[in-house]
Length: 351
Figure 1 (tube, rainbow, N blue to C red):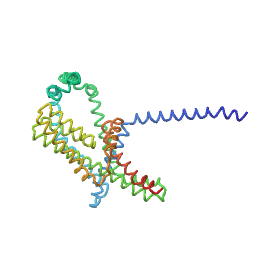
Figure 2 (cartoon, one colour):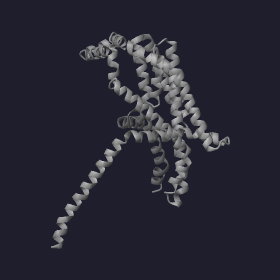
Figure 3 (cartoon, rainbow, N blue to C red):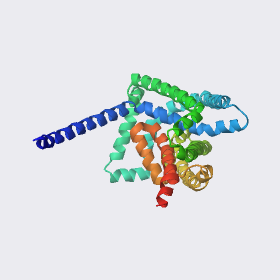
């Protein structure tokens, strides 16, 4: 009889605990989804702190106390950002407004390009219809706010953006100032016999990811700067806006550079087909130089991330957490690759 009771109760207990496990997983998943923005801010701040840490370390080697080195780097970064905003934002706003005003005509001009006409004929007029509808929509300035959810939503997005920026800056300062303390605290969770090896690997991961962040921002800045010069020499309108967009996109390696180049060529195609051809040739050459000459030299001290991993990480991060998630996903993948290379592979080779 007791054996029968045990047999009856076991499936019930298994089902009960299984249901509780599923419920707990759902609650945790809901909590993570709710805290997605906060998690993104934290990861962004961590990687920014790792990216700025080499600069702080360089100042420490010049006998700067770490608090003063952190303060110097943060003040210098905010000062540089302030100068860029002061000098570029008015022009960006002006050119962005002009771009939206001329967008309907640009879309109309694209439909007159012979290649687009042939492609439109093959697709049964789908391209022409889509561009015509988009041009009609953009022609009315009252529709512009609806692209981001309406006037109220524009204000909310602006507030959230400013708030998120402040949070990321504050967290970055905190992580940067307490980075050594955080590493020391985490190392205490590791068995003493493995603590030395852990400290070596954690320092290497932090340095590699930090150099990766600095290197990728440098490559993106060079891409945008050279592109701006070429677009200005060609007399292309909205050169500053396009260069800014290229910089933001190029921070995402491989995917962003190609996307930015395609966007610039597409806009140039609507304005001046000759300029579009020149820009297409320029980006075809530049992207090869970036892939095989510039990036390897700039990123030689960082972790090399294979192209398929870059694409997968960027798409996954973008799908989960938007543009910021795509930016954070690459250095996160780089750190995982480094850990696998330094710990897992040597361990497997010893077996």
